[in-house]
Amino acid sequence: MINILITGGSGLVGTRLAELLRQRGHRISLLGRSKKEGDTKSFVWKVDQNYIEPETFQGIDAIVHLAGAGIADKPWTIERKREILESRTKSTGLLANVLKNTTHKVKAVISASAIGYYGFENQHEVFTENSEPGRDFLADVTRRWEKETEPIVELGVRVVKIRIGIVLSKRGGALEEIARPIKYFVGAPLGSGDQYISWIHLDDLCHIFVKAIEDSTMTGPYNAVSPDPLTNRELTKAIAKTLHRPLLLPPIPSFVLKLILGEMADLVLNGSKVSGARIIQSGYEFKYSDINLALQDLLVHD
Image 1 (tube, rainbow, N blue to C red):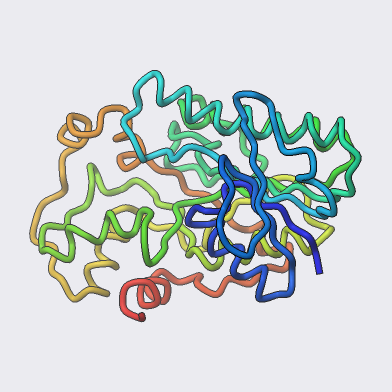
Image 2 (cartoon, rainbow, N blue to C red):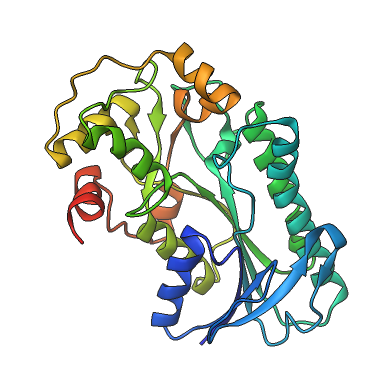
């Protein structure tokens, strides 16, 4: 049994991950902005005040750090962009500072990151963990986010950075947004439709986190993406086929999406083709490596 502290544990990934970890006999604690009701032990932190409840790390063997403001939840105003950045960098920095100045037995920190690290400048390159970071907003956020884990490494704690792709799940997230217009016969590719979507099924993502916790040989960055990246057009067609819906409309022009979404349109008009080879080489076997199998599970099966 491993005692695991999860930050951001009430979100899409954290909820499912905690469920899987409990099934494997591990003990879960949560760290968030407020106490959680229920049987799970929870602790409070106030990131802006550099405060974590003193007893938070007592008995903890590993930390899974998922906390961060949602990338697509609100328009990218100057204030929101600062919140997206600081919710990641300041929270990671706070963990590093407390670990440095507190007696604990934490052996591993598994930190969420994102394939946004690679940016959108070259949509034809296949990105690996050794690729250079991009230069756009999300790439800068992710690079600075990961940099905040370096002091933790210096403490001798094993750090794994999981660069998460586009997560497909039954409820919430990208798939729900893409599938909704298709269900109502108004689905269409976005922009050119040629932008790559490096996707991953929620369960595969959470099992990668489980492996990172349990496998002491894992360290550094890993791309959490399926071996089958698709273009936006290919994914749209696959969803339509799974739902038995026709695609009647032409692609939605880029300028329309930019008018509606502003700078956030980059999230759907751009993409990156990311390799999952390193996580496969570590011994992880994907349950959902094929998009059709994943969509059958997510859109058809209860």
